[in-house]
Length: 264
Image 1 (cartoon, helix red, strand yellow):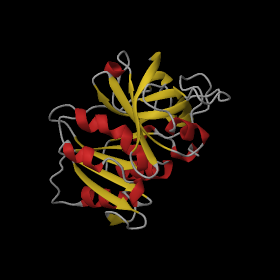
Image 2 (image 1 turned 180 degrees about the vertical axis):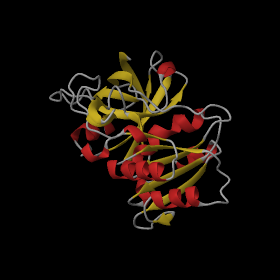
Image 3 (image 1 turned 135 degrees about the horizontal axis):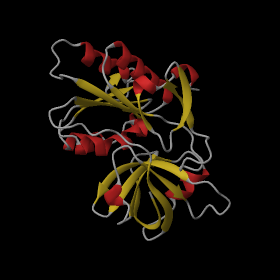
Image 4 (image 1 turned 90 degrees about the horizontal axis):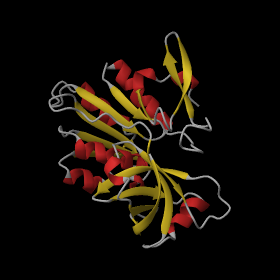
């Protein structure tokens, strides 16, 4: 974990609602592992004390990138920043995904919306290519298909309104694949990032079909470094459970360890 001032290389609109930000961070970029995140202070927000957490999307040389959606004054201010502007960044943060070993499980990635951002490095660094299941409400919420396909991965998209791919929830084609006795996927392992209801559904599928799964839990973060305890979730401990911090012990947890009855 390093705190550095980084320079924006590019900050361009990716779709109608999403932007792709690339920053030059020569000390941070080599340290980044799949599923980790960056905590960003947006300089134009003079009255904002808290940083914003963003999943790290790609790493190229001495740069890394994030995908973000303009949902409030923080990301709106970020969208107006230009190449050459500077940001204060703490990264890489968090416990990320376990990269599969050669000849081990075949990864099945499950993403909701810009949960895809947290998956790219895992797909890039996995020695086994698998399937990416991506879901969203509308076509505009389906991101990065071309990037994953360029890595040689199969991408299956679903939208709730049927505007792209199959109509329905992302867990439907995932279930079909797991249930299919003719599937070419042997020894699958699930990796998921997205809204909490989707993660819970993936966790239930993993439990029912006895498939290992790692979930990147999506919780609101304030400090991002394990001090404030606002991002805790219940994790099983013996016959009981205890709170663990998604910013430090997570965001990635083994699905079988999450005490869903206590997750909000």
